[in-house]
Image 1: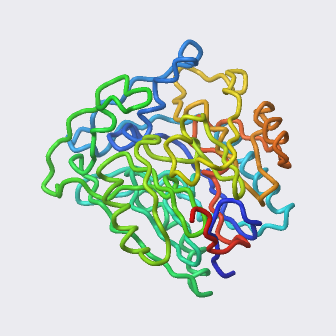
Image 2 (image 1 turned 90 degrees about the vertical axis):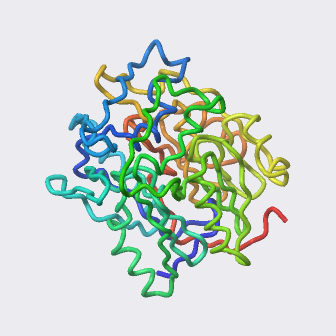
Length: 387
C-alpha cells in the first residue's frame, strides 16, 4: 500500500471512490454560489429546457454563514449511490483495490469556525481537495465552506499510506471570510457564461486578512514531473505560489490563465502520453506549448437528450460538458458515462477501449468519474513529458 501516482493514465492499482451516503441538502451561501456561478443559470443552448433557481439571500449573520439549505430528493441520492457502486465494481473487475471514505452523520455534521458555520456535505468529489504527487498526499485549501474538513473523512486511508512511507502535507487553511474571496473573475468579462446575478459585496469580519489561498487539486493536470495548474483568481495565485516553493526541485508547475473558473478536468484531460481530450481546440491554444503538439480528441457537443429532466426546484450545478470528466484505468481503457454514445464512439475511433458506466445525476451533484475518484497508486513514475 505504497502511495505512487504521477499522472492520469498509467495502469491503476488503487483508488478512492467517493461516497454520497446521507447527502441531503445543498447549502446556498457565498462560497457555494461563487464556486458554481458559472453553471447556475447559464448554458444558453440548454436555457429553454432547464430551470435554474435564483441565487440565495445572504446569511442572517451578514458574513456569509448559515446559508439557505435546499433539500435534495431522496431518489436522486439513492440512484447516485447505485451508480457509485457501479464505478466500484467496474474498477474491481480490473483488479483495482478500491477504498471508500468515512460516511457523514447528517444529523450532527457541521463545520463551525470563529468566522462562519456550514453544514457538511459527504466526501463525494474526492478529487477536489487532495493532490497526489508521487509519494505525497497534499490536502489543498478548500474553496467551499461546507467542504472545509472533508479530507478528515479520508483520514483512515491517508494514515495507512503514511504508515507505509507516504509523505503527508496540509496546505495552509483559510479563514474564508467574505473578504477572503477574489471576486474579480466572476465580475469580469473573462467569465465564460455568467454570473447572471450579481455577487454580493463581501461583508467585514474581525477575522479578515485579505485574499487567502483557496485552490482545488482538480485545478491540476498531472503529467509526470510536470503539473499544469489553472489559475483564475488571486486565491489560486497564492496557492500555486505555495506549491511551487514546496515542490521546488521535484516538480515543474506550468500556469494557465483562466482556462475555466476553477477545475480543469472538464476542459482538458490527458488520456495517455501524446493524447488529450479537450472541450474544444481553443482550449488547447491556451495550454503550454509542448502540450499543443499532442493529439487532440474533441468530442461532439453534448445533447440535451443525454441528461435526465428535472423539476423546477432541482438545482443544476455543472455544465453539459461534465461527461468529458472521464477516468482512465490504463493508457488504453477509459470509463465513460453510458449516456454519451457520441463520446464513446469518438474515443473508440482513437483506439481506446471504452467501459460504459451509468451515472445519471452528474449535473445535480457536481461531478463526473474523474471527480468521484482519487487515484492513489498507479504503475507510472516521474517521467519527463514536457521537456
